[in-house]
Image (cartoon, rainbow, N blue to C red; front, side):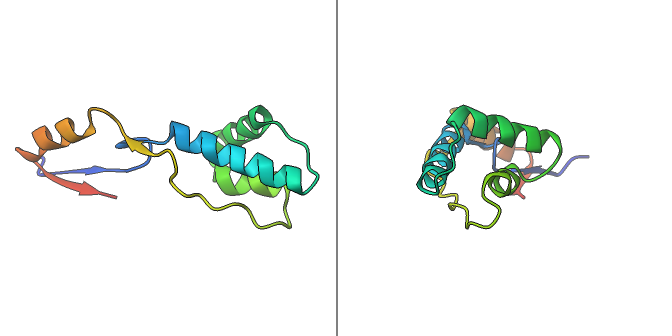
Length: 101
């Protein structure tokens, strides 16, 4: 019998799509300040490429463009709950213990 259900936060309970957009824009602006030209679209494509290779897309993409420069920090700007998250967790909590990993 299932007693526990565990959830990951990112892209499971939390919608990070807008946050990735904010972060990509922040990285592109930082690269521009370093005289490195890259579009937001190109940066995003490189992140997707690294994610498909099971690499950390945030670190790997920054390292690709500016390996010796410190990367901008992720700030959670734009992160939000999916609209159905609270309702789903409330319903599940009636029959299961819930955890976040």
